[in-house]
Image (cartoon, rainbow, N blue to C red; front, side, top):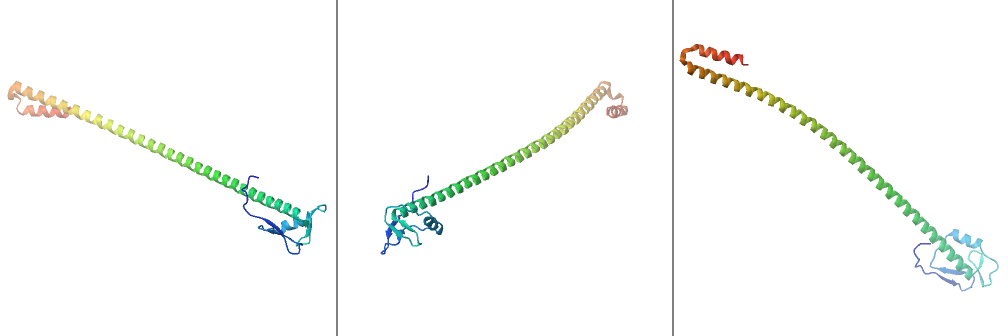
Length: 183
């Protein structure tokens, strides 16, 4: 039956009146005793004893019945043990599945958060890139204006030096005209 062997020692004795067979080392339930009373065969050749419950049974028959009942009880216990083990395994499996489901959902949530964060960072990067390009265009325009003013000032100074101080105050007006029209 696949169960563990019982180490319980069972002995059979007859009492001093030889009326009752005493079984030592086991406890029998009322259910077991009733079944033993009901199934007493009548054709046994071994000596019979009158049982404590009124049934007349042979010692060998009593031993056989007790052994059968012990085997049935042990089989029942083993069956219950197997059932509990199966239920335990099913519960463990269910818990493992639940933990796995939670872990998968947590991972999906984490992945979705990372994806959302990456999308947000990409938008921020695009915005910074746009601002940098706008600043770059502005600085290039300012640099071009400065280069043009420097060019015009050098041209004016060069012209002034080349023609002498002939323009006088007119040179200053000429310079202002060039600067304000270049804007």
